[in-house]
Image 1 (cartoon, rainbow, N blue to C red):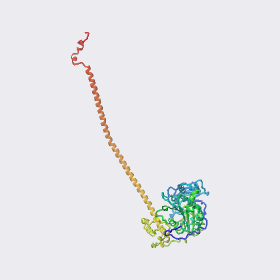
Image 2 (cartoon, rainbow, N blue to C red):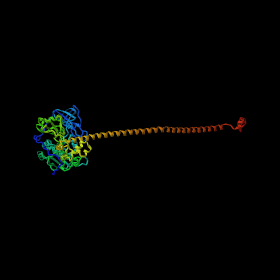
Image 3 (tube, rainbow, N blue to C red):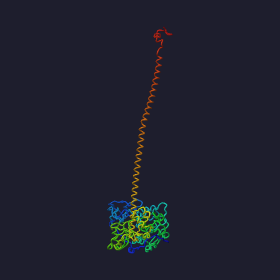
Image 4 (spheres, helix red, strand yellow):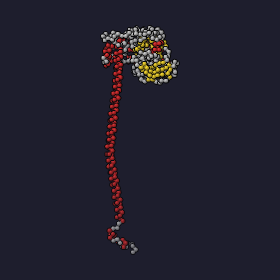
Length: 547
């Protein structure tokens, strides 16, 4: 298979012989575990247990609410004795919400363990993604990005290549090497699950050329049914080949677009430890509650790899490797290039803890005096992201945060190659981190301002609408009041007309009655002669009168 070369990089000594000499040591259950609720990129989980609750191993104790988030589970059985802020592994040294469990020593799974899916290949892909999410699986190469998100490409986004990143991130770290030696079957089973879920065409399994024993074991244990579409590839051990973008370039010759994701070019990349965790949660129903940690450096008496529960204090992990050597002055989580120093070994192992590196003063001499940049260009020559580190440095110093983004600040992977070769001893990566944090902080402030402005505009619109509706109601009321007298006057006129009509009808009726009465009177009254001679009717004899 033809390999490609990414720009820059450094050839560094691997320093892994001491930590790979012995098999992985499975640590026991510590008496007390401090489990942070935010162990991943994204929104921290919220506690779903209370102080005093008894929990079983694998029980969910932290519930994620967002999409880019991960659940947190109890590493062992016991009682919740505190939910509070405690120091956690972070460059800031700040505290964060944690659930503290007092172990009962039984390591009891109870009835909260998820059902094993031996028939996982008959399950719907959405069910498999949900199982990975339920297990709290994150990338175990150090970034701790929620795995379920990477297994859910956008609609219409075709994933054709799955890459297994077996390249160690930095010198001294050998956690992936020892995992591939000790549990290759679980890794291959996890690969089968993910390949089925994403419906990929091929799998490229990258192993650095300084890991010959791991490559030998993988070659011997690769299942026959996977040999047609899973290809083991030995790659040069050039730092930072373990970077996702750099490894994709080496294996495929393609470059991930600036600001884009590997899925944009049809590629998904996972760490071997992530594949094992997927196998555990799908086939055995075991959420992510432990991981392999490399304990190494000149400051450790017996460097080795240990399998530790999440929440185990760093001090216990160091003790499992024989304890500190004399004159130790520094403990680093991660490697010498991208790791950060911690100031208290009581802080716990988290999902992103792949290495603990202890050093002595003579192993890490202080850098020389800080001098001005001489524009030698060495930093640009080794930058694997093909950036201009000196320009980023100048823009960061000038606090020109618009211009620094034009130079690709957020394409910087903070590998430290530039600072490693700088003859002026300039801590370049610290400047880049400072600029990123400032930009993020300003973006948050801008979002808050936008929200406040939207709320103000909405309030003003609501007030105007209410005033407009009030004015309309008042106008309608005034119109109704004005119309009422007119209607009343109209009613009076109508009533008067009706009354007049009634009066006329009565007058006519009275006139007719009077006329009728007058007629009757005329019939009953004698004529005028009779009146002048009233006795004529009685005195004069009528015809036929017997008189």
